[in-house]
Image (tube, rainbow, N blue to C red):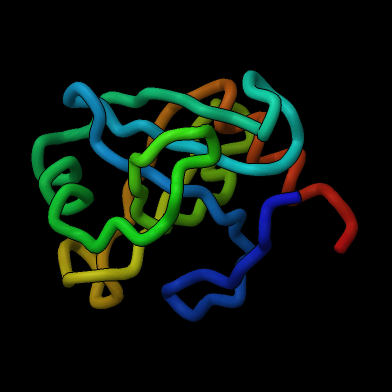
Length: 124
């Protein structure tokens, strides 16, 4: 089960822990928990702006890949941004970008949306 954490903005809203890195120009996100498209949970590749990709590339990659790989990932967290579209709001702590705590941005992904929704709906 994915770890639930509070918003980096201090709102108290719950988020699900995920991790990401830039791979082939795309944001590669992994999440551990309910099986969506991987045995460990979910993995998706998402197009992001060059600025977002640059921020992620510059942060400390401290988390190990969820598969047998030497790849390292940046800690991120996600919540559902829209109840009628597959939009996921992502936050990351680190150097200031568009938030004092680091970065916040939205992505569109059916699989990531399903993962975050199911993880947030689980009883603690």
